Image 1: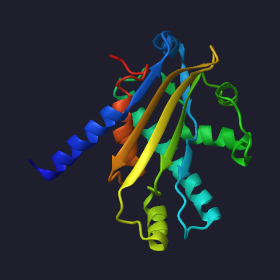
Image 2: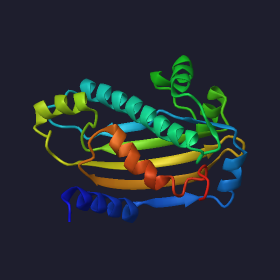
Image 3: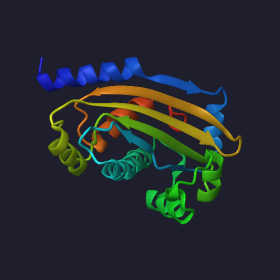
Length: 206
């Protein structure tokens, strides 16, 4: 068997076997009633290394958050253009600008419902990414030079949640742990979303 095909099969198996899914009985109907949704900036945590400065690590986490947010938006927008998603998706730059204006990036913590109100959307996709090392090329190189981890396998634990503004509740959650040579944020998001979308209430045919 071709080595690359074998690796894809292994990754696919791990994705399917590790995923935990929750959704409310009315998740589908509530999702169908939403006109527009936003993708919130993911909360990203990267395992600290002995030789990594704390301030630098925080900056890397911020960088990864923006990268993941944009990759998730691009992934869903592509499916929107393909006709597999009916709901509108707020432009990610608009989301970032509105949250920055509301000083979310200054440490202010808001509920998903409050975020929906600020963004003027009916639902919001929130996420948490826990990484064993940075995924963006520049950040990964910087950490690797200091800690000697450039060739190691990355591990990621990801949680996705959909909150409905009208009902003020979480209607869907997807937890998954990945362990492989995940590469870039784009690769991780593609692997993650291809699996998660099979049970996500926005997608037709689910």
